[in-house]
Image (cartoon, rainbow, N blue to C red; front, side, top):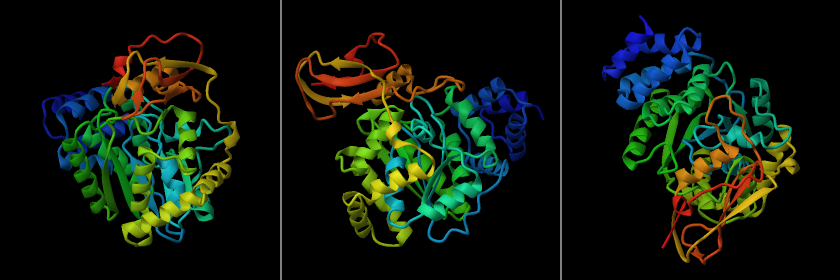
Length: 408
């Protein structure tokens, strides 16, 4: 076998065998296949897709590239949660503490940024001292002690995904249903949880743009979960507008805390919905009872206190959170009502400020980002502030407001 023949075969829309996929991806992990060659294969997959058989096989290859975590020593139901990601998505930081505060164990392995905004690990690293890389023993101990832990992907758990994920991030190959399904499900299965909740973001500001593609992803991931005897529930949620008002790493941690402290809005509603699903299957109670428990632990601050306990346990100093002192307000040039906010463009702008990565080696500036001062349905007058940019310096950012807000 050679990588050129495999790339050519996929470019010609032919199905790759288990052996061919194994050769290509394992050779990349071993350094025998170069970045530019794997990028070509990934692009061919993005353009021509993969069959269900190829997707099942690739998931198995990813799983076998490393170890699988054994969480059987931890009492209680273990539920992992994953989001396919989108602009302003910080829901893991909200629902993990909520669910754990109600006695359901939440083991979470997270990644860094994919596309225009930082990932969960990047957001947590905006907290001074926060340890994002835990050993298996540390991870299990934290789950036993407080019921919730987040760690970056360990070197021996699906290592292939770690390298492919980073390459996809900077080669325009993120938007592929088979690659997304393989990446997510290999990590979730290797992570050792009993049950899995997947939040499939769908819309302009997400990897999955259409409801049709979201349903395809839902189907294949639930099938992979069933194959590995892991109950998998997939929820499709809207990502046509940014999720919440804060986009940027430290800013999103702050907003997660605001929600746990009672802030209302779309982000809170979705967090309650997803947390209720996890509590329902974790405690084996109906959804209404689960929702009542979720609301109670938000109102009595037990969920917020669980978040603070989690941050402290992993060495973080929550008082260290800060945003840039360089601010620029973007004003409206007309009056009306906000009809839409263009999530993708907001995400790209946030990335250009330094909140995301364009290359694997890029360093994120945790203090920069965007706060939306006006959201959909808000009344706007001329010269009202639509959004505020937190920048790395005082350089003026030239933008066209119409690229970000539609006001009617």
